[in-house]
Amino acid sequence: LSLGGMGCTVFGKDGNPPVISNEDRLRIVIKARDHELLVEGRMKYPVGKPKTDISRAGIQFKAMENSIEGRQTLATLTRIVGELAREEVRRLRLGIKAA
Image (cartoon, rainbow, N blue to C red; front, side):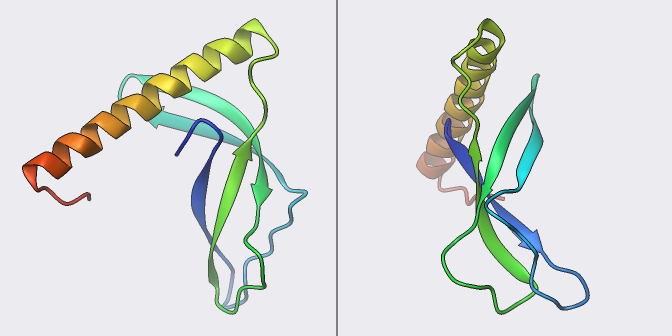
């Protein structure tokens, strides 16, 4: 998860590769502790065709800074990403592996 987007795992059906297009638009609800926000994005598929029913892909978030609501969403997303990064640093210092 970052301010610009996020990675995801996509599953196909019945052993077939997932059907994804760069034209696919998504609405994503991000929940983290006391925060919940809705962002819009576009599917960004890795180069090459998947050969399995599971594939890695990315979601690029829509630009958010054009309105007051968008700037508030960006500020909340910044807080979430910052909290997750600090939590990861703490885990690394303590020698705890991520779940």
